[in-house]
Length: 395
Image 1 (cartoon, rainbow, N blue to C red):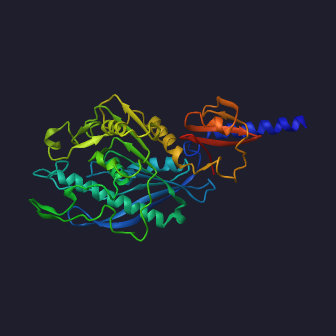
Image 2 (cartoon, helix red, strand yellow):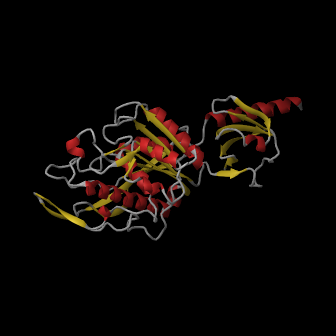
Image 3 (cartoon, one colour):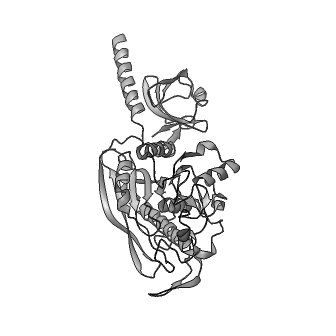
């Protein structure tokens, strides 16, 4: 009997070690398959022509999951260039973590002044480009919600992120709500006259867009901001704060970490761009609002590049942050279907395999820092998530 108990304990510890070192939605453990060029909408461009909008969808093939969290990646390019293909490798890596991962195209283009973009005709052009992006992303989310069964999506767990212009779109698509005062620039405004003709700028309508409106736009649970910015910090008002991961370099020459115009390092280009608030300004604003520090994580790197100084490290940090919110938690204190009694004794391990706590109750666990732990109780092992004093077990 002692031998049997020892063998069970050895096997249990081995399984727990695997759980500890294979973090759900962090480590890339799954095989994947891609569906490319999936059409989700058509929409009118800035110049009156029509765009056909598409996305690439990547799903794990061996995770045995009927529904997974969704991560939607939005490429950058200053609203004038870039492609969803730029983020294909990123989408694939997140699908290997257990997400249904999407890289999406949105309408590009702005009217230039005497010269072509990145020179802008006026400040309204970037604002309108941003709102076209918002409409397209929210339309894309509804398309994915309508097809959730086909792509194995749990619409209650959604992460959106991007870089540069893509992050600008992601931030606005997540935080703007019906109570926000929207800029006058998205209404009908004066025409643009250029050598090749005169172009009207009609009222843009709702930021929701006009397609797939037979289903509600699913809410966003996490935003991943890679050197993006907000047009107005008041968009953080009203609705509950959405957890935010941000990265920026202090002296980014394209999108300022503080408050400045895009391309601020080139005054001739930036003159007709609106002021925007980057990561440094957003973090200062969150502190003033007394937003709980556990609901946002910020990495501000001392540097002067519109880039990521440590791509692998920042990607891993973003994945760890998002995993806290997409692990489909079930409270062990409230869900009687859990195989563990709330009065059971627990041994917890850090993600590095170190013992964090021994022989503690669920109530005692609540006093530990928020995070993901490997856990052993009654010769059973699992992964625990601790958030805001509540202990969860991922389903």
